[in-house]
Image 1 (cartoon, rainbow, N blue to C red):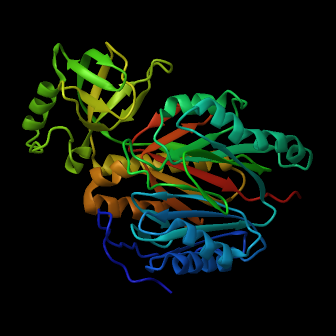
Image 2 (spheres, one colour):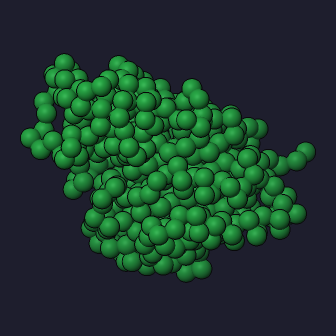
Image 3 (cartoon, rainbow, N blue to C red):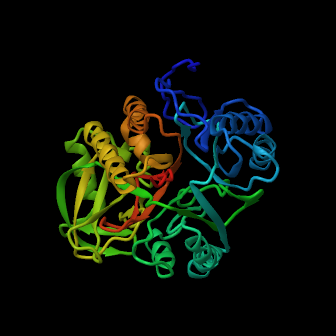
Length: 428
């Protein structure tokens, strides 16, 4: 039975749905559910029951994403009751949307139920992320690494790590803190669910607890490789030379005050300036920056402009190398949809020869704003088209972090992270 189809609305206080046209395979060990009822406990319960029914097997883990309108502690109680009291949970809240293979909503709870013998997992958590990123990363990975030798001895040779963070941190440092403990061939993917200077309303789910200022890691052990991909698809318009920068702030471009260069650029694009120049406003998420990565020559990271400093500097959501050449980017729907397809193709190729069992998506929320209402609808539909019969769950993030062998690694804004987890291929 298909839900009524309505248009995606870009906003935080409305509901939106994308009609599902492809039936999802049931009974393989994974399933999803999404509820938009107002009551937090009931939303968790409904989403969990739908996910459990679709999974059709004894469950190992529940992944939960919820929008901020809900009481997360009540969501956890509802999900736990719906999946079964012994099933551990992991997840987060978001300022933006949650979605699965059936629908998308900015007032909802989405649940991914996982079971069967295709994979095993270990959860880890590091507290006090805002005070010590390195210690939190070590603590979160410790139980995962301790369990790996046991899992390898039983045939679950491949380790991948998915992580969530509820405190806006330097994503590059966080990634380095994680991968220093891991072999180069272990794929790592995560997201930051809070924006810089956020309201501190975001939180994480670990086990059955609601926690804050933490890093949670899901160590997934599989018999076949996991596939991950990341792309953004913003179109480069014009280059500019950074002639003075410090940290995340650009003070001068081409020897001129950064704000003057930016204002002139927007004027030529016929984009009206917001009354308050301390913030660019949601409309200007359309124009972002490509900043070169000194550690990976030839590769750039997409950076969201967060606002104007009192001195007229442009503050970005990430560090800017001084004396670097950066590009001003524009959100163009066709290229961004192509980028999603490339990310999916990259992940799908890594899963071969196995068929994917389920997927996890992290979509930058500024990307949704940049695409606009119609474009955002098309991207959600693109997810459905690409995943087809593969169940998946997704959440909006404010920073996407990835490390995959053979691909550029690091921290980006307004990109799409996705992971495909394999079914076990039976021998003979």
